[in-house]
Length: 459
Image (cartoon, rainbow, N blue to C red; front, side):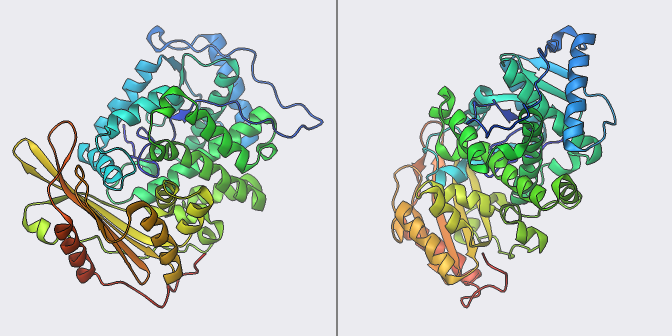
């Protein structure tokens, strides 16, 4: 199986075509004179252990597949097998896929990045927490490797119909636009994978609502966002999960749906199909359709140097891009959604590095993040939010070491650590003098760029 580590902070651990969060009871859409198409009375897929689905179950899937195909405007090229799994089995399949296809250090580094930026508690187990959230919220997924869709065994009839429509939309897309090459994990391509993931999930969500409501345009983007956020936040596991993690789970569905709806207003599904043939390269292009149409590229930002840490044996585990979607999620931790959206909208490019070195049974980490905004004013707007969260200059932390940052021109640089982990809570291995020295090395290696402003279009 080939999978990408997707989502704004790589939360959607399994693949770019699922897993789907459990359907929520969304706000009622506007009534129309025509009732929405009703789902099949009952969808009973066989448990995986019982072999292939029976004729009745296969017929139910085929009926829904035909309805989704009519709504989505894509041909049915082959049948789609359907299986029902209990949650433990479903989560085990997801975990096995992740462990098979995603480097372990990539998962570790994602957790350390979140911890270093104070987006999760210092002792939070990112991988375990992410799997727990998925295990509690996943309703189903489509596997492009075997062309089958899988549903959780505890969905009610309406939830099963919604999830079936969503996963069959993935299956139809895969038959016309092969998904596997699009969602393969690729080092350094995190933001692009987040954009692709969002397109895939937005497409399936819009098609699902066309089937279950009669038209996806009966629900506003805000109503869909509220439904996804509320369903996750009100769940037991969602209440125990850091906000940045839950936001990362739902972001591809929310942002992807808004993107697909914007395209459909321009040219319905034909406009969406054109994007499938040339996917967004950044989440900025996903969040701003005009930037997609202009194919406005991100600015090239050099990865932060390790400086003295490199000479001490630290080596990069991950060198990647957060992107506008990820920056918004970061800023939502300190500001309102509106503030975070405005701040992130000035994104021009970024790079972050998570570095580590071994010291006996201990593992030491250090994190650096270089952000470039479109204008000096954009950088100042984000810097104000950074100051609200991280204070000024440098702040000592007992567990995760010092956190230091600075804004110059259009650029912001943040460094954290070093700190060690040896089971239990981390422990600082440096102070502000070390962090500020590293910050200086990063600035010296790549001075702030374009203080007069970017040549890009901006907001």
